[in-house]
Image (tube, rainbow, N blue to C red; front, side, top):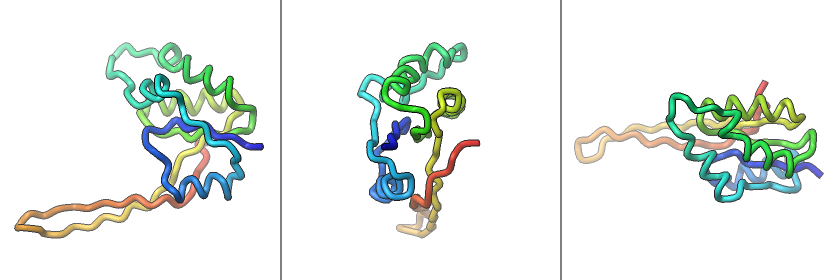
Length: 128
């Protein structure tokens, strides 16, 4: 039985969920509780932020909910992501990110050039 914790700031798309279940064979997708989700989604801009302290509750949540070989989907603030990818590897988890195809279209409406972007999930890639 494989599990995955989401260190992710938005909801999974249907195609991401399907890929998690079918390609990765994950049987349990675990979201962060609200307090920890807020920590992940709103990393402070303090210059002296120390990630080992700031991420300690999230690291504990992973330890309490995952086994070695389980997955962590990690996308967010660059510094927090880097820290948690390394932390996950040290604990024996498999850190992943979603690879997306970007479809951009430009058009003119009422004399204004507008740009529309879509992001389509392709697959999950392991951080190396």
